[in-house]
Image 1 (tube, rainbow, N blue to C red):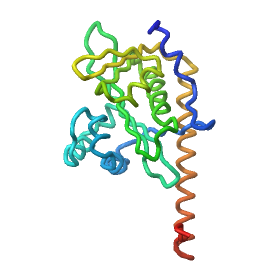
Image 2: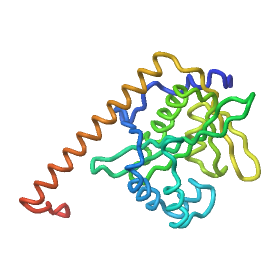
Image 3: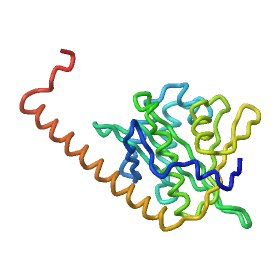
Image 4: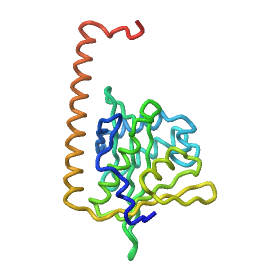
Amino acid sequence: MDIKNANNNLPSSPHRAGQAVPVRELHAGYRQEILNHLLQLNDDDRRLRFGTQTPDEVIARYVERLDFNKDVIFGVFDLNLKLIGMAHLAYLPEHKGQARAAEFGVSVLPEGRSQGLGTALLERSAVHSRNTRIETLYVHCLANNKAMMHLAQKAGMTVEYAYGDADACLKLPPANPGTIVEEAANEQWADMDYALKENLKRSNQAWWWFFGRPDLAR
Protein backbone atom coordinates (compact mmCIF):
# COMPACT_ATOMS: atom_id res chain seq x y z
CA MET A 1 0.00 0.00 0.00
CA ASP A 2 1.22 3.51 -0.86
CA ILE A 3 1.14 5.14 2.58
CA LYS A 4 1.62 8.53 0.97
CA ASN A 5 -1.91 8.26 -0.35
CA ALA A 6 -3.32 6.31 2.59
CA ASN A 7 -5.43 9.22 3.75
CA ASN A 8 -7.48 8.89 0.58
CA ASN A 9 -9.12 5.88 2.26
CA LEU A 10 -10.69 8.20 4.83
CA PRO A 11 -14.11 9.36 3.60
CA SER A 12 -14.71 13.09 3.77
CA SER A 13 -17.75 12.59 5.98
CA PRO A 14 -18.40 9.89 8.63
CA HIS A 15 -21.63 7.95 8.35
CA ARG A 16 -23.72 5.82 10.65
CA ALA A 17 -26.63 3.96 9.12
CA GLY A 18 -26.66 6.51 6.31
CA GLN A 19 -26.43 9.50 8.66
CA ALA A 20 -23.33 11.48 9.60
CA VAL A 21 -22.02 11.22 13.16
CA PRO A 22 -21.65 14.63 14.85
CA VAL A 23 -18.25 14.83 16.55
CA ARG A 24 -17.79 17.72 18.98
CA GLU A 25 -14.50 19.17 20.23
CA LEU A 26 -14.53 19.14 24.04
CA HIS A 27 -13.09 21.75 26.38
CA ALA A 28 -12.12 21.60 30.05
CA GLY A 29 -15.74 22.08 31.09
CA TYR A 30 -16.42 18.50 29.96
CA ARG A 31 -13.86 16.95 32.29
CA GLN A 32 -16.56 15.33 34.45
CA GLU A 33 -18.31 13.85 31.40
CA ILE A 34 -14.99 12.44 30.21
CA LEU A 35 -14.36 10.89 33.62
CA ASN A 36 -17.85 9.39 33.73
CA HIS A 37 -17.34 7.94 30.26
CA LEU A 38 -14.03 6.25 31.07
CA LEU A 39 -15.24 4.92 34.42
CA GLN A 40 -18.04 3.08 32.61
CA LEU A 41 -15.53 1.00 30.66
CA ASN A 42 -15.18 -2.51 32.09
CA ASP A 43 -11.82 -4.02 33.03
CA ASP A 44 -11.21 -5.53 29.60
CA ASP A 45 -12.16 -2.33 27.79
CA ARG A 46 -9.82 -0.33 30.04
CA ARG A 47 -6.97 -2.72 29.32
CA LEU A 48 -7.51 -2.35 25.58
CA ARG A 49 -7.80 1.44 25.80
CA PHE A 50 -4.81 2.09 28.08
CA GLY A 51 -2.72 -1.03 27.45
CA THR A 52 -2.86 -2.24 31.05
CA GLN A 53 -5.23 -2.83 33.94
CA THR A 54 -6.47 0.62 34.91
CA PRO A 55 -8.24 1.18 38.24
CA ASP A 56 -10.58 4.10 38.89
CA GLU A 57 -7.96 6.22 40.62
CA VAL A 58 -5.57 5.97 37.67
CA ILE A 59 -8.34 7.04 35.29
CA ALA A 60 -9.19 9.95 37.59
CA ARG A 61 -5.56 11.13 37.49
CA TYR A 62 -5.46 10.73 33.71
CA VAL A 63 -8.55 12.92 33.30
CA GLU A 64 -7.30 15.46 35.84
CA ARG A 65 -4.04 15.86 33.90
CA LEU A 66 -5.63 16.32 30.48
CA ASP A 67 -4.23 19.52 29.00
CA PHE A 68 -6.90 21.02 26.75
CA ASN A 69 -4.52 23.80 25.70
CA LYS A 70 -2.05 21.26 24.32
CA ASP A 71 -4.03 18.23 23.19
CA VAL A 72 -7.48 17.88 21.63
CA ILE A 73 -10.41 15.81 22.90
CA PHE A 74 -13.34 14.89 20.65
CA GLY A 75 -16.64 13.41 21.75
CA VAL A 76 -19.91 11.93 20.52
CA PHE A 77 -23.06 12.36 22.63
CA ASP A 78 -26.29 10.39 22.61
CA LEU A 79 -29.79 11.90 22.86
CA ASN A 80 -29.44 12.19 26.63
CA LEU A 81 -26.11 14.05 26.28
CA LYS A 82 -24.24 11.04 27.58
CA LEU A 83 -20.70 10.89 26.21
CA ILE A 84 -20.66 7.51 24.46
CA GLY A 85 -17.52 7.95 22.37
CA MET A 86 -14.37 10.00 22.86
CA ALA A 87 -10.97 10.39 21.25
CA HIS A 88 -7.77 11.88 22.66
CA LEU A 89 -5.48 13.44 20.06
CA ALA A 90 -2.16 13.89 21.86
CA TYR A 91 0.51 15.98 20.16
CA LEU A 92 3.92 14.32 20.46
CA PRO A 93 7.07 16.32 21.32
CA GLU A 94 8.66 17.92 18.30
CA HIS A 95 12.17 16.85 17.26
CA LYS A 96 14.29 18.72 14.80
CA GLY A 97 14.33 17.09 11.40
CA GLN A 98 11.37 14.81 12.17
CA ALA A 99 7.78 15.06 11.03
CA ARG A 100 5.29 16.58 13.45
CA ALA A 101 3.19 13.77 14.89
CA ALA A 102 0.22 13.06 17.12
CA GLU A 103 -1.13 9.93 18.81
CA PHE A 104 -4.76 8.89 18.58
CA GLY A 105 -6.61 7.02 21.34
CA VAL A 106 -10.31 6.19 21.34
CA SER A 107 -13.00 4.56 23.49
CA VAL A 108 -16.65 3.82 22.77
CA LEU A 109 -19.19 2.55 25.29
CA PRO A 110 -20.99 -0.73 24.45
CA GLU A 111 -24.24 0.98 23.47
CA GLY A 112 -22.41 3.05 20.87
CA ARG A 113 -20.45 0.31 19.16
CA SER A 114 -20.92 -0.95 15.59
CA GLN A 115 -22.40 2.43 14.65
CA GLY A 116 -19.36 4.08 13.05
CA LEU A 117 -18.43 6.22 16.05
CA GLY A 118 -14.81 5.09 16.12
CA THR A 119 -14.43 5.81 12.41
CA ALA A 120 -16.04 9.24 12.80
CA LEU A 121 -13.71 10.11 15.68
CA LEU A 122 -10.67 9.00 13.70
CA GLU A 123 -11.71 10.95 10.63
CA ARG A 124 -12.37 14.08 12.70
CA SER A 125 -8.96 13.70 14.34
CA ALA A 126 -7.23 13.20 10.99
CA VAL A 127 -8.73 16.37 9.51
CA HIS A 128 -7.86 18.38 12.62
CA SER A 129 -4.32 16.97 12.51
CA ARG A 130 -3.88 18.08 8.91
CA ASN A 131 -5.17 21.56 9.75
CA THR A 132 -2.67 21.87 12.61
CA ARG A 133 0.31 20.79 10.48
CA ILE A 134 0.55 17.23 11.84
CA GLU A 135 2.21 15.00 9.26
CA THR A 136 1.91 11.58 10.92
CA LEU A 137 -0.91 10.12 13.00
CA TYR A 138 0.01 7.21 15.29
CA VAL A 139 -1.97 4.57 17.14
CA HIS A 140 -0.32 2.39 19.79
CA CYS A 141 -2.33 -0.43 21.33
CA LEU A 142 -2.28 -4.08 22.30
CA ALA A 143 -2.01 -6.44 19.35
CA ASN A 144 -5.20 -8.24 20.43
CA ASN A 145 -7.25 -5.03 20.29
CA LYS A 146 -9.21 -6.24 17.29
CA ALA A 147 -11.53 -3.23 17.18
CA MET A 148 -8.65 -0.76 17.07
CA MET A 149 -6.74 -2.80 14.53
CA HIS A 150 -9.82 -3.01 12.31
CA LEU A 151 -10.29 0.74 12.59
CA ALA A 152 -6.63 1.44 11.77
CA GLN A 153 -6.55 -0.90 8.78
CA LYS A 154 -9.86 0.46 7.51
CA ALA A 155 -8.31 3.94 7.56
CA GLY A 156 -5.37 2.72 5.50
CA MET A 157 -2.81 2.78 8.33
CA THR A 158 0.28 0.62 8.13
CA VAL A 159 0.48 -1.68 11.15
CA GLU A 160 3.53 -3.27 12.75
CA TYR A 161 3.40 -5.89 15.51
CA ALA A 162 6.04 -6.52 18.18
CA TYR A 163 6.00 -8.23 21.60
CA GLY A 164 2.24 -8.18 21.98
CA ASP A 165 1.89 -4.53 20.97
CA ALA A 166 0.85 -2.95 17.70
CA ASP A 167 1.83 0.38 16.18
CA ALA A 168 -0.11 1.90 13.30
CA CYS A 169 0.69 5.09 11.44
CA LEU A 170 -0.93 7.21 8.79
CA LYS A 171 0.94 9.78 6.73
CA LEU A 172 -1.21 12.86 6.33
CA PRO A 173 -1.08 15.23 3.36
CA PRO A 174 -0.96 18.98 4.07
CA ALA A 175 -4.10 20.94 4.83
CA ASN A 176 -5.95 22.65 2.00
CA PRO A 177 -8.96 24.99 1.80
CA GLY A 178 -11.24 21.97 1.67
CA THR A 179 -10.02 20.55 5.00
CA ILE A 180 -10.31 23.97 6.67
CA VAL A 181 -13.90 24.38 5.49
CA GLU A 182 -14.73 20.75 6.36
CA GLU A 183 -13.55 21.11 9.96
CA ALA A 184 -15.38 24.41 10.45
CA ALA A 185 -18.59 22.93 9.04
CA ASN A 186 -18.28 19.77 11.15
CA GLU A 187 -17.75 21.78 14.33
CA GLN A 188 -20.68 24.07 13.59
CA TRP A 189 -22.91 21.09 12.86
CA ALA A 190 -21.77 19.28 16.03
CA ASP A 191 -22.54 22.38 18.09
CA MET A 192 -26.01 22.58 16.54
CA ASP A 193 -26.61 18.88 17.20
CA TYR A 194 -25.56 19.30 20.84
CA ALA A 195 -27.83 22.34 21.29
CA LEU A 196 -30.81 20.45 19.86
CA LYS A 197 -30.21 17.49 22.17
CA GLU A 198 -29.79 19.86 25.12
CA ASN A 199 -33.12 21.57 24.36
CA LEU A 200 -34.82 18.19 23.93
CA LYS A 201 -33.47 17.00 27.27
CA ARG A 202 -34.70 20.14 29.01
CA SER A 203 -38.13 19.77 27.42
CA ASN A 204 -38.36 16.16 28.55
CA GLN A 205 -37.31 17.11 32.08
CA ALA A 206 -40.01 19.78 32.20
CA TRP A 207 -42.57 17.27 30.95
CA TRP A 208 -41.54 14.75 33.59
CA TRP A 209 -41.72 17.43 36.28
CA PHE A 210 -45.36 18.22 35.40
CA PHE A 211 -46.67 14.77 34.56
CA GLY A 212 -44.17 12.33 36.03
CA ARG A 213 -41.57 10.24 34.27
CA PRO A 214 -43.20 7.76 31.81
CA ASP A 215 -43.21 4.13 32.84
CA LEU A 216 -40.91 2.66 30.15
CA ALA A 217 -41.44 -0.85 31.49
CA ARG A 218 -45.00 -0.97 30.14
